[in-house]
Length: 483
Ligand SMILES: Cc1cc2nc3c(=O)[nH]c(=O)nc-3n(C[C@H](O)[C@H](O)[C@H](O)COP(=O)(O)O)c2cc1C
Image 1 (cartoon, rainbow, N blue to C red):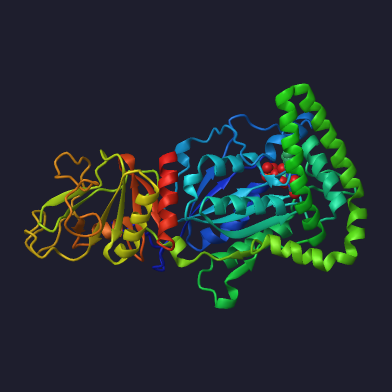
Image 2 (spheres, protein in one colour):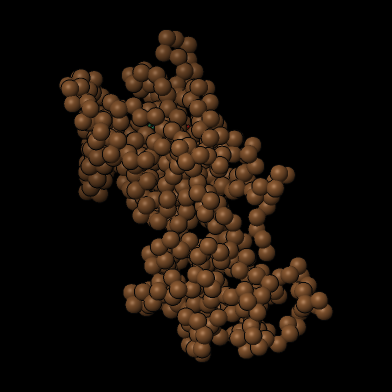
């Protein structure tokens, strides 16, 4: 069961899923500029619009705009989403594009909610950030990178579009836009938000990034040019914002009136800080080389967007959170068994023969660390030495059904028993199953050391790449149980 689809030139279709939210459409424009070259290059792009159950007002009232601050800077915050949970799933060959704007130097609340409520989507995934904001993206993208690392994802970096005009002008025009709702107005200050040149830059960035045959020196793309004085102020203010946020939340828990006083104090502090910012930048000028180096260290590789590796987009047929495809495989004795059994309550790890040693060690480790039942099966492409002729094979020895082994919707008719109590006698759980046509191996994508973890109820809990089997397995079991 091959899942790869091919475009006209015979190149496998690359796939990406984009999670996005925008109030005014600016972020949507930026995201579309980045993905347009991917679509043109034959990528299959799935878009998921993340919609808050209670829409944020636009234009904002001053009260709402500052009232949302303490929640924005709370890294555990979640809001209710109108987007159905069923939209938050991921295929193993889909790259994740997280398209978000910045709210108070943090990822906006809808996107923070995606990270906090669907952590299982990100384990072992490659993720790229596409950001459109006024100017100050540094703390937000750094925070997203840290969260993705906690979730076991690989952040490839960020493509960021900003309003490139001077800081003070963008501050006035953005606030005028947010509170008045008008992006374009007559007058010397001009329009707010990102301009066409920034969109062109994102388009160029998407084009370079989607080209998967770069030379070694072209493995990265500059997705986010760093403006050092802005970055320094952003990274410093990001920490202070989080402190203010926890202080305001504590005050609000005591009494809403006290919370309102704390928010007002924050607004006064913010105004004063913005007023003295130019002076602070001037005073820091003599130290700017040292400060710039510190900023580079903190941002790491974020501004240099890495291109996806081949393994990030290699395809398999299984969808996370969906029932695992079921195959009839043969035991050594020739007896047939249907895998997986959705009635099973523990985990089942499926891997190919060549990857068995690394997964055997990982299973041993997990069993020491955790009491959650886990069984394991090795699937071998070789025919069993004493196998009876397969009933479903035709006289040429080929399988009907396109070479695929019989897949059943129900396991009731199949002999079972691969769980922890299954009889021992072969590979690392006493179970080696034979798949001479390779249908199950291909269908599960058990190549290059990969394994598939099936969770309770026969649902795919994770596709594990096998780069760090112990960690991948323990993390996948934890998020699989939390689901
Ligand atoms: C509550 C709020 C806080 C914001 N904070 C920041 C910020 O810290 N840094 C920044 O560059 N832009 C900030 N912005 C601007 C947004 O990042 C974004 O550019 C603008 O809201 C338009 O995005 P949209 O695509 O959702 O319409 C903020 C906007 C809002 C509404």
